Image (cartoon, rainbow, N blue to C red):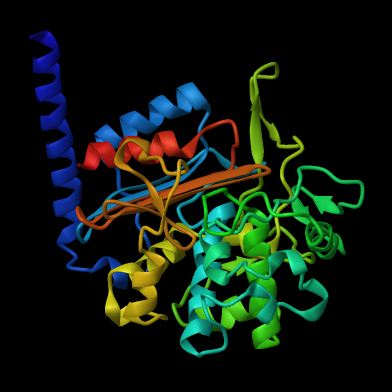
Length: 379
């Protein structure tokens, strides 16, 4: 009985707090898509939950939660750099959340009839990256992690990697190392998460457009959507004062320290996006708002189709599936990201019109715990 009462009281608190925050903000009559700058908005139950995650997992980063056309919670926590706190508009590396952007670029080329989803990738890769092992591997297979191509390893003698990001000829040798290897399974027969699949998609984008991947993404994705604070981390990258740097929590020192743990190297198309909550909010409108699209309805449908079963989604009890660069499960789009110093997770619940974005510059915490917990609160 006591548990039921507590549950009822908590539900009332959530409802009241969210209602008050929502109503105050909704009075501005500003649709989410038109918001020029995300304000600080605090929902007490959400804030209490985040403070719990700070205590338990040492969370640092930024959080945005929206429902319908209202911001329920928007706040920043911890430090971006030494002496600089995280702010709502701080730029974060979001790791594998990048993959949906690469998928969108591929769909633009499909619309332009420069590539076909179901033709061999050898038809579109540069000659020096074509492999006899990949004759039956299609772009669809790369997008859905069903190619069977062996992924690159955590460490190799030839790697030139700085804080997880590939430099020099590392990507070239990674691909050439994979080319002669037999596939792990027949293309299309099962799901196996593969970063190198998206590395190859980036090569296809560059080969078919004759533009560097980072340049193409700016011209054809970021600029049209007015994502002015987003870019692709390239080998010449220099961290600016308005960006977060990556940490982990050291239990012995009882403080956050620079993350120096060896991690999987990151290539541009599989995990090098730097963005903000504001810009990512603009991005997610492509899935629901036809007036803000850089893709056709057909392409959006293809990206958000639940193509293959996977165990990669946070909704493991709901028959999770994978689309193109996205987990797609019963109307919920999501994806995690994890690189040296940074983790991220986003949830876009289309049926309930809920968005939750968590970008963190501390790999000790798990952003899925935070995003899924907030998602549950908002429902």
